[in-house]
Image (cartoon, rainbow, N blue to C red; front, side, top):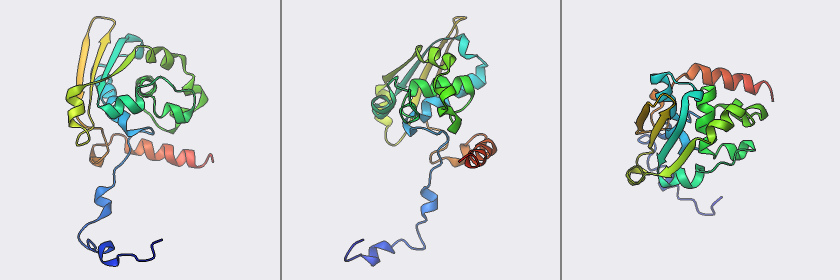
Length: 183
């Protein structure tokens, strides 16, 4: 607590600025710097219907914080996995989402996810990096076994300041309610 609070400053925006308008929604249960890559990979999978076994390689181009914070392959614990973009993208493509159940021992040790992780590379994309922090984007390139190359620019993370863009809100609420009963 302050000995001399500035009540005038604390109430200056009262009735004009509403914090609820600045609240963001996390669409995935992990580091926000991985969101655009997860969203882009899931968008490509939804559009083209490929299975994880169809993937030869995935290249993710991100901004500096994406590379610095999540561009590693350490995913042995729930805390580490939340900051491991290759795990997060692979697990989302194999299991369909990154929710609380992504960090169970079974999911952390999933052999299909682990195999797909080996085929994911994360690198700095200078064009994407110029957009940050205004824009949290990712560029994906996925090569499939049949020779098809899919490319996608995910200009923004789903959710964030765009809560109306969130997918499957009922599914998230059901999972949260179910998990709460297990504590």
